[in-house]
Image (cartoon, rainbow, N blue to C red; front, side, top):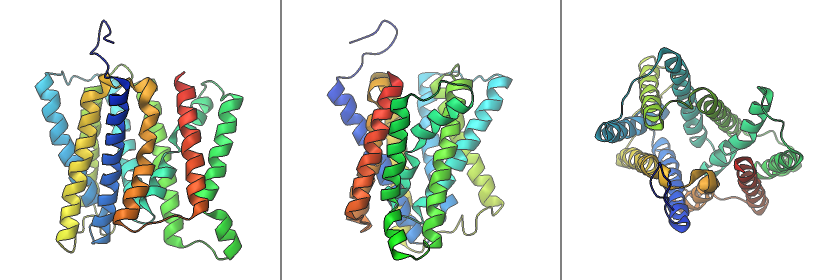
Length: 306
């Protein structure tokens, strides 16, 4: 049905199909990133390729639509903070993907709705309801299964340092993204989405270039060892840009307040792609925990929007 001030919404089955497609494309971007990293590519190089491609595409869309890029000083400061938070989130998530299974990194990153509810409460927002608190508890219980903490305790051996670092980086990614969402919702709500997206990607691109020039990460700008790594960099750039631009262009017609939780299918898609392409598999206990986490996150997201 068409509203008086916006474009007509897509039929729900098309909107959900589009969001599943976008989620799959985003998960393919992360799987391609892992292939590139396994072939020797640096994390910062992957992020620069991704940000550069999406920046060019987004700039073309914004100029084609004739959007004004004006920005007040007050909004500019918050926009700079948003761009920095997304840059840090991107570094943490790609660094996690380089160390642990892609689906595990994305599943931990998907905890941001829980963290957002807690952050909003801590900063003076509404207290989580009993139902939300119960869901959060179930999410944490499911996460212990996904991380296979019972199995680690049974083995009695300390977790692998690379695995532990990857988990901490994924948690940091979720935390930075939570802060970015809070800034977007509470400080940049008056800024048009196209302008906010363009400046955010621009800041991310500049931060990655600066980090690479300053040698912020060891081997962060390292080139891949072979054609497989270079092809993976191209694929991750194309996948991210396609997913981002599809979401950017069609978002006004996707009824996001109703359908946004569908985006939580990204870890599921990454689980399938990780198994097919990277031979990354999970045991039954981890799969059960992942199902519990995703189910509770979707319910929590729907409850919050209502």
